[in-house]
Figure: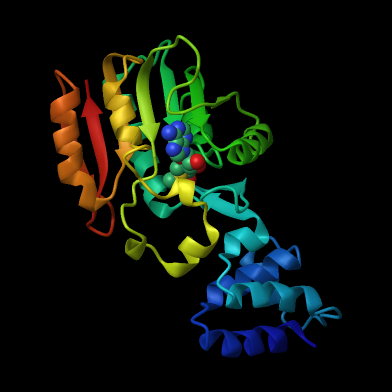
Length: 274
Ligand SMILES: C[S@@+](CC[C@H](N)C(=O)[O-])C[C@H]1O[C@@H](n2cnc3c(N)ncnc32)[C@H](O)[C@@H]1O
């Protein structure tokens, strides 16, 4: 079967399952080791001898498996990272968090000497790796409670040739360091009903849900592991804004804060300066 026929038949079938064309094209390109969209279109007449592997991948898409878990690839700010079901697939909102963090760090720390930066809940490692690339002279640490996720982060750190120290720890590493900057996308979802079914089915729940026992914001606001000043940037959900205001009020003495929106107009980021 020619690539074009296969592609068109999968698009037709995919429509019944709300699978978009782009996911089908990326799946095929990934499984046929094609790097650029142009190589896909230039090879539409290519004969595909063994369609089984593509059909298997397509079946996974039909089952609702996110493309990134099929291809083990996620794109984050132009770079490619390895992901598997042990880590959250990095989101566009987190790309925005990173852009905001880089902007604020440049404003508050123009000379960038001896900065200690911490990424809490590093997952695949994207935040910590990107921060180290942006601020090569800073010490960048990352914590993660899931041992399986740490393996993924370490794999990405090695592949991206950066020095990031990853700790299997709850919120802060087991060292004596106090941090100048905290950037974190912690679990922040309160209710299952706020999450798509495929996310619930396939992504790690420990990465998603905030709870009384695991509220990373609270753990940070209560801690004595931050310097004065300390710049904190968090990703948040719009429906926890009031709780966060109340928490800051109760747990921190002197601080200023700012909530900002993502590109879709949802309150998504909290910047705190202590
Ligand atoms: C929303 S995911 C973010 C992953 C990654 N930073 C990203 O933005 O794609 C949250 C991550 O925090 C980890 N985590 C949850 N509670 C934690 C805690 N108390 N301390 C450290 N890591 C935690 C989870 O295992 C998960 O990998």
